[in-house]
Structures are given as C-alpha cells and as structure tokens.
Length: 252
Image (tube, rainbow, N blue to C red; front, top):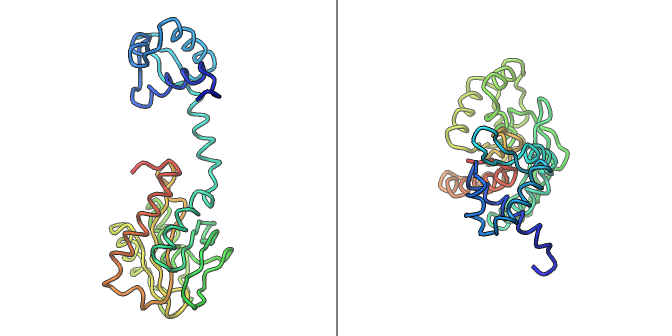
C-alpha cells in the first residue's frame, strides 16, 4: 500500500462505489466513501473532467462516464480466448484425463485453436488447426446449436451433410433434433462422428454480449462416455465452459 499514490487509491474507492450504485449524489459519495468532503469535491471534479464520472444535470447525481464503456469494449475485444481458457482447460484435463479442446467458428466450419492431449495411449482426430464441419462432432455442433435461430437454419438449409465417420449425422431432421437436445441440456455429445470408436462432449462458451464464441470439449474412446458417466462428465465440462464465459464478461 505504501507504494500506491493515496489520491489514486481514494479516487478508486470513489469509483468502486458505482459497482453497487448506478447513481450517487455528492453527499452520498462523501457518506459511503468516508473521505473528507473537500477531498471528494476535488477528486470528483478531476474524475468528471477525465470522463470517468458524468453528472446528470437534472438531479445533479453522478454515474460512471462513457469512457468506461469505451474501455469495456476494448477489454472485451482484446481478450485472447486461448489465454483465458487454457488454465481452465488444464484443470479440466486433470479432472477427467481426457483430451480437452477449444474450438471456434470460422465461417461454415469450426477450427481447433487449443488442445491438451488425452492421458491415454490413443491418438485422436483432434489437432490445433484442424477444421471440421459445424454439424459434425460435439464441439462443432455446440457452436451451431447456440447460434441465432435464423442463422442456424440458414446454415442447415444451405449445407450438404457429408459422412465423415460412421456416426456422422447426415439427416437434417436428426441434426435439428440433436441441436434441440444440446440447447435443452446445455451440452452436446457425439459418438464416432469425426473418427470411429471415439466420443466427445462439449459445452458452449459465450462472450459479454451472450453470443456463442467457442466450444470446450473433452474427447476420448467411446467406452469412456457410456450413459452412466455422461452426467458427471457433462457437469465438469459445463462448469469449465461457464468459467471461461464469465472471464469473457458473460453474466449467466
């Protein structure tokens, strides 16, 4: 604390009041902050001049300035989802021992941008940079499932569903049903859709606007994803995806 500028710290104390109050009068700022009135007056004027506080002319109450909105958008836009997600992925990897993947949308495809290998002696189809159709595989499809309805329907109508592996969904009616289930359950599961004898379970990652921006999945041999294990695995993946979402500013 000794190395911190006291005026800056007190100014931050004033700004922190607005985390819990949308508007405050000058006297309320003095009351809640416990800072002497003369100091509050000086600091509030400076914060107002810098655009960090704004004064409403009608009721003379203060609120956070538009500068925070500008900074907020910049922070959200510049967050590197890989850096945000990787620590969470490592914890999930330790919990389940399966491969953990982070996938984002790129047009009509999904692309793997980060992965942690399974602890089991088996090679999976996952690899950083690999592209897959949005309709095939749990992680790709969870992105598709949480797109806006019209965008999702347009994709399904315009896309030819091709067989990738023995379990790939190539019927549009079944694809729509799988999407409904994903939205109801909050996760997607797939069996042999991208590679035979493998399975994956994925949950959606949202940004501060509530938009789908990625999917986190675990993947491994299909025998590890039997019905009796799904609920436990799903809760772990959903919790990891929610944590990443919240770090991106998403409010559930």
